[in-house]
Picture 1 (cartoon, helix red, strand yellow):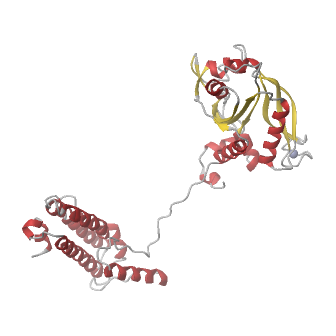
Picture 2 (picture 1 turned 180 degrees about the horizontal axis):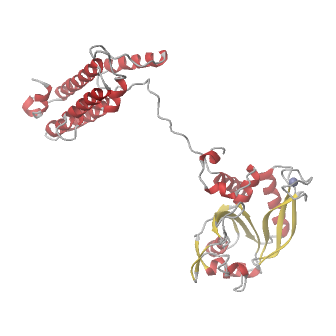
Picture 3 (picture 1 turned 90 degrees about the vertical axis):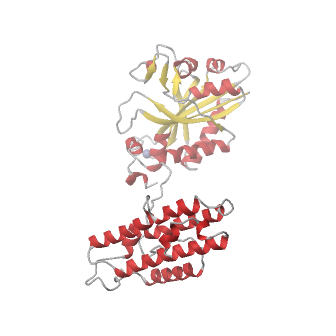
Length: 400
Ligand SMILES: [Zn+2]
């Protein structure tokens, strides 16, 4: 009985009633498939067209969705198998399907390189290196030696698929590095919504209605009471409300401004803010912590300098400069000959802001800082255009 005839009948009709019978039947199918494949490869083709036609014919004979031998095996053997035989038939069928990848057109074509002169001789194999050929031989011996091995024959001499590995975006890298430093100091990471209410973004932070930053020239509004947050500071209020004091957090995330993109501006960028609230927190704690942070991030040689500034949500407020990483404080173009570069804003949390967070300013004090992640990344990696971070150009990203 030919294999087609057998596949046309159910296992019961064929008198197969045990695992051994199932296995030998599937072995016969595989042997037939392999023999037909070898014959096709050995026969070769006289033209590209003929080769494609022959490959497709063999493929369809076995793998056509309708009427292909594999699908008929599914219909007649697997689906109609007696209940106790189903597991072994299912297992063997799955193995067969894996094995049958060897009659896919691409696999066959790859082995039937180049048309022949007379079509009667085996096709000359493509030039391969010796080790590849030996490996192939070793594997194919093994394949036939161990019955039930589900590896489909594969031409190991073909070049592989290259799958380039990605890397972590420089912004994410810098954020993680900063987060790690503060995690090591006992801070925890908090996040909040990017679509924020006017209350959390401005009112609770002591930013009055008349403040220019609230204008729609500077801020992207969703509606009158909702906006895309302009800083990560709302997370400070939300965390104070949620956890009370004492509180040590860093809040990383995206923020939005109504800015036109250029080399130093982007309508979306990243900030990290820090907040420490506890009893007896002083400006000395703020200075000590940020000095430690700057040296951890930029290197031990870095010195910090604090100078007065103004923010509505801190009092007193300061700005933090670090000694220029390029010239080590000697003066260069990057630091405009001053030897210093501004990197952060900071200050003691305004008592009203603590109150808005539900914390009693008579008992607790706190400090906060905020920094732009892009700016840190640009200084760390020597990047001069902020837009490079958002263009997803692999030539840029693969450097990190
Ligand atoms: Zn400099």
